[in-house]
Image (cartoon, rainbow over the protein chains, first blue to last red):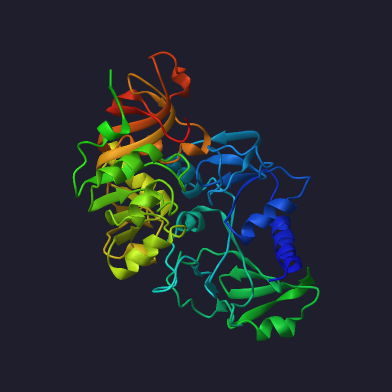
Length: 217
Length: 219
């Protein structure tokens, strides 16, 4: 996906993050959200390998071997952060202390089911912390491309791949649309500036309800 | 006083088929010297319990690549292609465990608990073959304790009583695994006299540790 579309997704998700919140950003596209955090809000980032206060990458030559993100890459700590072990890290996640988690997805469906950790027989990297994050976070936001490499919708009536968690997704943000998961199904709330309701509907296999007013982003 | 020894001496009692917990997260906070000593010793058919399969050329990842691991219990194996290949060929059994569940299963064993009840994994493949327990109207999976013969851990400092300090994100699974194994070997960049580590900084209490090895990537 073109960089400007990835940036659009990241910027839109950044606007969803509440003031004074603790947020976990998944590896890959979700990480980009960190570059667009609203300056007027206090948002702390949680890193599942054991700290709060995740900061940007260090300058070359200033890497600290003891300080990496959940992808194993060198990072920095912002002033006011803290470290803990893996049990505490997941107590924070599972115990309802994490406000938002942003993750990628292979498939999401009408019930808010999520599949993002394996394609049987092809790609089995493991769930890492994803299952705990999706179950534990107060709000689950999916950051992903609207369609897969073959052009097929990633938003389905029902997931076909093994689930990461059942009925936990709250919001889906793609380069084309912002879709909310509600007990009544998926609701299209916003459409990208260069897209249209028709395009979003044609590229979405799942049934979409229309919000009373469809915004632009 | 705990035994202060070399990595080679520390792994002397590891036999083929042993179960070993290995600290670290993507090799950060992993005992690289002890992994090299295991590789050199030539032990095989190991059961390894660790967060991930490491990287092909680093720490625990080297044991996976060399085919020394029969059973891997981990949350993620994606950064070591050999792990996926050996899993698909049937050469190595892989049990994928959600990371938080892995931490709690290990902690449960170390804390004398009969298991943990977690909502993580409900409605997924992880649920298969496990008991679902209802508490106050909410469903949980019963996850059983996880113990090992050995824990191989990394620390920045350890004293001769076995107290150890692991810094920053290198801490990860190290303090938890120290509780849940019969022999607990800490590889520390600095080995100091008792009292030289501020007691407030100790995050692996001496009581768990059996052996201290000087070395590792911190040194």
